[in-house]
Length: 199
Length: 199
Image 1 (cartoon, one colour):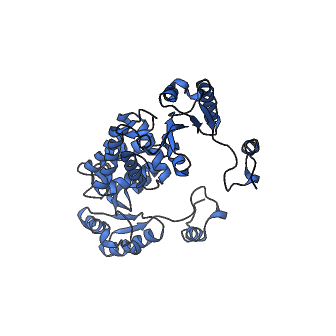
Image 2 (tube, chains in turn yellow, blue):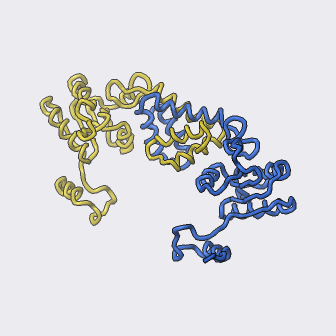
Image 3 (cartoon, chains in turn orange, purple):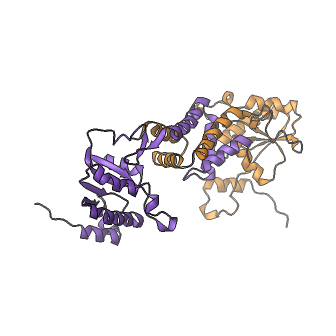
């Protein structure tokens, strides 16, 4: 539809997740319009990420250099591991300010339909850390959906024989949520997970 | 929040139109995940567009090489010009298959509030074409909104003394539209623009 290089750019932008043909076109025309240095900053940023970013050899988080910023921080509690599916989940946990330990990124969750079995996840690396790092507790912080729950269950079974305390994050109603609009599974979990209150 | 180069990429993607922080993050992680050659195709496409794309010296459409693909096509009727605001509008008109002439891209519409006056648009270039190319008709195909209408009116006044036939695309109800849901301005225009039917 457009001249060669413009159509190529529209096609490439359209491969990004959540970008349809119209958005890709809008983005391409935006890049066409802006000053060359502004557009080239984006292309350089892509090159830089592909060249510089690696996986942290300890926790499989995104890293630049020898290890990720969490593992490199000496103030973190080295005896607790929070297991997440994705590096983005680390940012979510960090924002809570409730966790001072280190992480382990599985790089996905068990999903037999999409061909993701234990071999595709960073499970061996996790098991290797328990003894090597003298881990006292593993918090299973995978998503509270089908795949995440199955993954947590699978990991709990593997971790039990190693004698490490294994915990799972709580499911329940979101803070500020509304009982009336809660689905029955969530409300059921909230009831199961009830705890005494000190009054 | 993330390691250096990843955060830079998220920030740069977030500058694209319609891309919020969450989408930028999702795109960045997608680029992080895909094979290097797939990510680098996007960065090269950006570089290529900035290096190769120019404005067509005749009609100010996006061009690669000496002139745009429409102006370079000898089958086009060289005596009719369709005036549009944006190169994307050319694609929309081309899709109709109703126009065989050439285009002129204003690169915007009059918008005093945003500081777009006649000097910022490719109006001088349009006027220069009328005599030089022996133009018989100019179709004003700017958007049927406030800015587009003002631009069409302004151009019509400039073109009148030049003795060239100047037309404006019709406003009315969209095909497949519903009278009940039409706004009163559109319906009013549709009534004003009524024409006899041969039955």
